[in-house]
Length: 91
Image 1 (cartoon, rainbow, N blue to C red):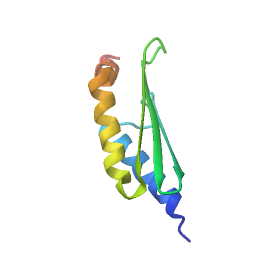
Image 2: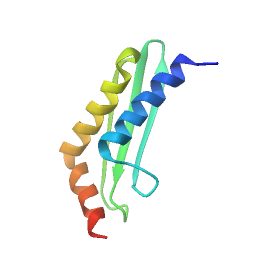
Image 3: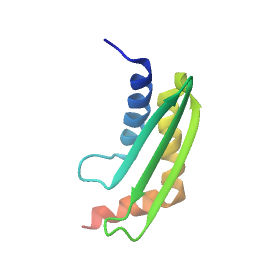
């Protein structure tokens, strides 16, 4: 069985995580929610001590799920997320 809403949300979430190189050891989060044909994708990148956060969201058509995930990640990296993630390399 396949659920198209779940497929769209997970596709966007995975695209976001790939773009920010997120995994189990990286303080990032992403959640996709479908309403009709629209996908709302919300994400965060946190400094490891919790003192800084970049939080953004994007909304678009479910048919563009992968592109939405990539676009959101790129926006967040440019808005300070890259700096936060680069600090993790120093640990």
